[in-house]
Length: 365
Image 1 (tube, rainbow, N blue to C red):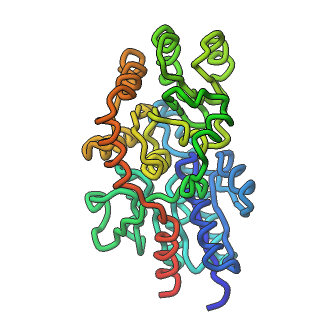
Image 2 (image 1 turned 90 degrees about the horizontal axis):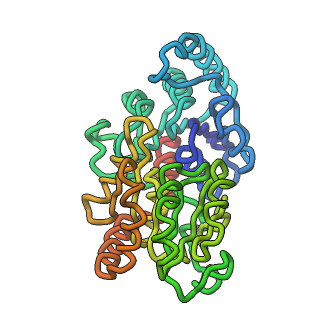
Image 3 (image 1 turned 60 degrees about the vertical axis):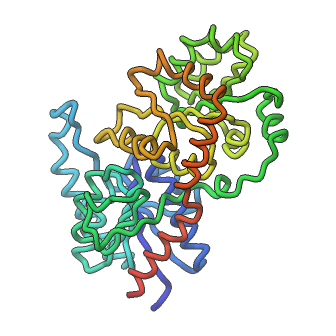
């Protein structure tokens, strides 16, 4: 075979984009001569994140179905048609040996056209509840790489391969000392620490849960490292003024340090976050976002809760219960140990390499 050519398609959220980039990086590590082309959705975050990672990307003018406002779907058939035409042009021009779909709007037209043109396809499903696009593409896929067991309820059993979710390299190789990490974030190394993360954009409910619990936080022996997200940082910074043990940050640019500081972690339940938390192996409280398709974050969280690997607090109950639950967990060393051991058992550190193994198997068949 000549130089391997791979199309990776999908995006829309970091939960799709960062695993896709991790797969691309692993392909390059396997063979630096591999040619990789990304295909995303115009105007979505992959159009910025993928070039920043050093890869070329082409955008399709595609959008998802707007369930909340049906009038916004009027132009959808035209967008779909143009996306299929452009996807055909891309496949015909690039001539990939394999096409990989990671979920998101763009992967639908691209992988369907790839299959139509005789190009073998591989799907990567990050969540415990399969997305609509991947379910639609499964019939023509050669291999479906999953991050959770028991995904045969969504996909043909003979195509499913359990690989895990690829995560950032710095998370798979955390080697910072607690003192170094604490100093980086200006924390007190003698105090137990709750790490609160709501994703890069922040999580309104989680932030409000901190705000309403200020008095509880002020009197606690513990300290809180609080990632607010860009959208909410200004108001959260005002809220945290004068509270010496509450450290509000817009971003946590060194997540390896942040995880090292933490005794207990509070997080949303996105697929990528959970895969990182499994590798980190610390006690976790998950607050699933209710604002995602098919409520997949709740399904992700329950996959851990059912194995006694995490605690879940519903978004609707977070303002009342979340901070109390975090401080209670800090006091319960036995439960911390149980959660830590069980979540660590679910970790898959070499997921990207396992997915690349499947991609190469399909491409070289």
